[in-house]
Image (cartoon, rainbow, N blue to C red):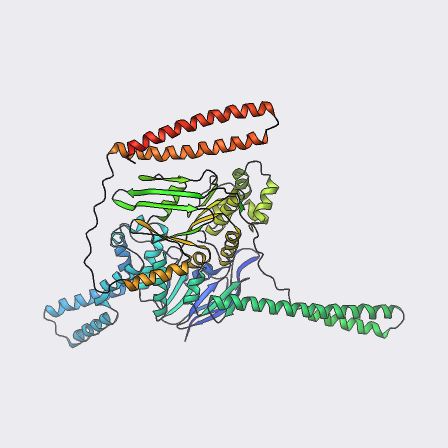
Length: 631
């Protein structure tokens, strides 16, 4: 049975450029289809046309009779004051309608009405209510909320107070709870943690209806879809397999087309050479050869039907790595952080050495981004200290990207980020990141999430770094852009710390796993595959019989206010010491360079002595604060 039929779909948003240009495909009942294509190819536009949110310019869309569509990218506007619980239960509106009618009929029967038609109607409604799970709504809501990490506390919050990612997660739960025949999922894994993604995969595999998913998560596509439709140039190309099959088959088709094109070009060259020779002979008086030359040229024109197959141009930019001399890149000692009554972590002690590649993983809300921000000095810990090596040059890609001048264009932002950079050099740099032509004069504020990530990476890569920190680097990026950043990270030989839910990215790069769970970080000195095996082994070793929960250990007293203030001052002092050490190292390098310039060397020596005195004073302050803090 055909669920979705699309014929000759055309849609444009600007004159002369069709986003969809004659798109035609068919999806049958029960299929699991992955909709692929680069950012801007028209995938989300297609979804909006399927649901009726947008009208097409030409073509037809047919949805199976009586089939219900649900689109995850649509976050409906709910009445003010709606809680998450009420949003989830809005999926049962049809059941609530049945329940109201059943209640009305029950009241009429209790009042003495005994019409047989009334009894039959009540019996029919009761049967439908039971078939649709009307008596199991609480169980369904609890199951879906647990799978998507929607806590009991969140279920009591106002829906409008949630972040965009949390709203998407709640709306996904509501959509799953609805009696939907066709699920349209637009980047469903972008805001889900690893547990929720794996739960969603299992749900989709057991879902009775049809699923069409736009996703750049290659693990998700491999585990869920059985067919791929790629949207390119406004048209569709079909692959009867998962993502791995698609990747291999796409390359095979490209090579086949290239071979056919080259064969055709070789034949055309041969015929052109023959036609030229015949024209020469015709010029020398052999008139009959002229007609033969014209016939050959007509044949050549008929052969010019195959366009040269092309691949998307790959970005070839790479990180500039600064040399690092030393052992310790980052040291974390007895770190603690809380927001009011919510304790994120306590007593974390970790050490990072040069060249390590560490994945920081954990459920949403456990504090991964908070820990990263403390490492970067954007937040201060409640207890403990963080110290980076004196020669560490860090670069940070945050999860939510902001620019100092969002109304400026790309060239202006590049020039502002690096003093002395000319407009032409900025354009050349942007071209390496696939920003070309008039695109470089767009305001940064109109860029998509993926384009903003790419621009920020362009700025990061323009400076030499030896400690790279990435917070969800592949979010909003299409597969081609993900592969590019993976190649850039592959060639980067400095230290890497990253937060990600992209299992492909974690598996490729992590040589060490930090799992943030239960207010602490568990260190697994191994890759992602070995980590998964270790977690499976730990789960197997857990006793199956339910254990009585141990009373949570009483949190240690953090000390009086004076100690807490001293600890905060101690953290600030340590950062000042690191800056002073960097200043001395820079002065010593300048002294070496000016060894033959007596006046310059004398001036630098005086500065060096002054900086050393300041550093000695900081060391004394550090010792005093350490005693006051009780460390």
